[in-house]
Image (cartoon, rainbow, N blue to C red; front, side, top):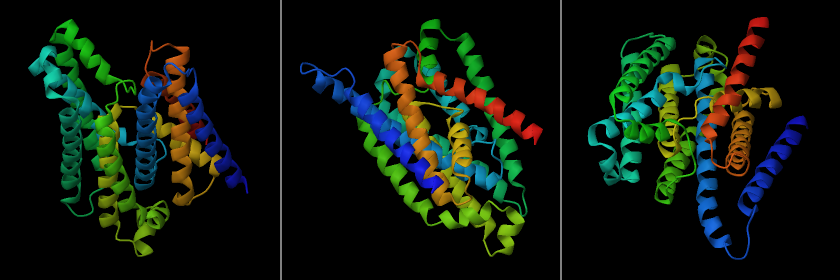
Length: 316
């Protein structure tokens, strides 16, 4: 009963925030233009929120750790480095010639390929610990961040401003042409992972218990990590990196629903993510007047919540 109550509240908030975001400030003279700008943003918010929520819940289940998020694989740092390299090599004048579609596809494919290389290294040897993968991801993430910082230090300040815009997530410049590609990719990935929902419940017990209960652990973990990498790659390539969103929505879902079943946790995390992003975007546009980005707001709130989670775990 309590779970249904929370689901109902989150669903009402998601619908209410969506209507408020679309309808706020509309008038007969400009509503067509306003809606043509807001509807793509709302679709991008739902796609990104869903992708990050699902990937974060799955990743925390696979790693059996509620503090880790897919960002430890280094995909966010790889995305930032790619954007820096493009501007550094081609210059700000030629970046527009590459086009947002090519940039999106290039970033998405590169992040997925990088993830597959990490997974290949991990599963090449028998009985390889999953945390070896996390260590590799963190090492490469640090390497990518260092290379990005070096190039940003030596590039022209005007070009750095272009890179800086890519370093923080923003829904203000989402291209409508990318939404269909993102939608199809995310939906197909969701469907691919859906049949393993109950296996996720078993994986949450840990590696040994999952194997004893008949789960082909390496096979299912390999598949789920590919799912995570695809969802994170598409979400990041679409709007940019949002580091703490996954940590925020997954832990809130655990706290609100207090359930082990992923058929409950994942929909709850998706709704929390959508509500958070729509509310944050509304603040960006109506309160802060575009003086900041939603990535800054989410990372600020998520960073505070991360400290709270660490202190809470330490007390336990």
